[in-house]
Image 1 (cartoon, rainbow, N blue to C red):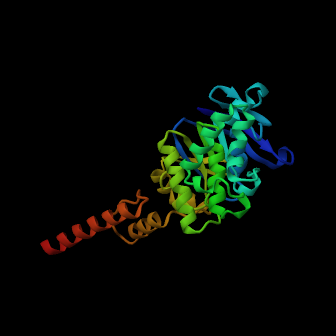
Image 2 (image 1 turned 60 degrees about the vertical axis):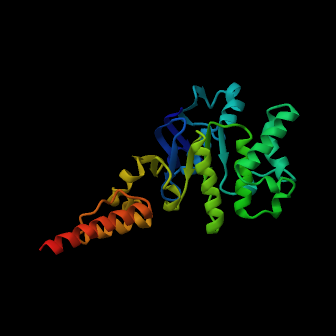
Image 3 (image 1 turned 180 degrees about the vertical axis):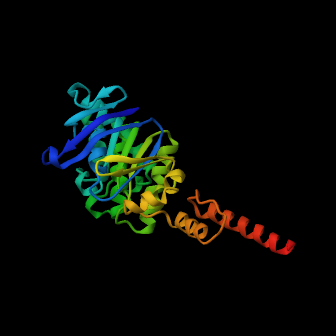
Length: 282
């Protein structure tokens, strides 16, 4: 478990705090989506999870290890992988396989184990055919997959991703999302920052941040039922959920706690059939 207690952090003094006495627990195996307005502290928060940043107030614990304790730093960063929003800030190797090997090499692992980890990580993200490619020749989506492979080679228990689908075309976005889904099915906890509400449909927990604190925390279906709060924060609902809310506002007795097109289609068809039956009976 990752435990955050009373976390505060500022880049420019206490009067401009980015995180304000924040409390949070993230359990092993969860898929957590993290959303909120620009500047609310999402990136600052996840950079505390693997001690890239350390608290100015409060504490962060990863599986019982405090992130300010230097003797645990290497193990914390092995357990909590961080995928940056811009993959060019993370890729350091001259070839794809050199980049993926960077983390295990820094752990001082035997060459045979490094080789195995690199090969397995590249297969996991579908980039094994690119092992000898120079990273600068890859697309944005491919670079993000390489970044994820580099984290996987460290055998993490948690992976935090900062807008991993930003600026990708639909095909690239789907490739990255499918890899994220696969990793969660393997039991790795996912913490996923996104501005695209359609990217969080597979999350089982949604955190909404506002001005350095957690404003809402719960199942996505429950959070999206809080239309007023979401609108106050300037956040849009997934298109499917928004459609169902509009139907309810127009007089339909319809379930709005639905996120997928398939479930929405079933719900609308059911209501239309019920209406048709009532009309026929009359």
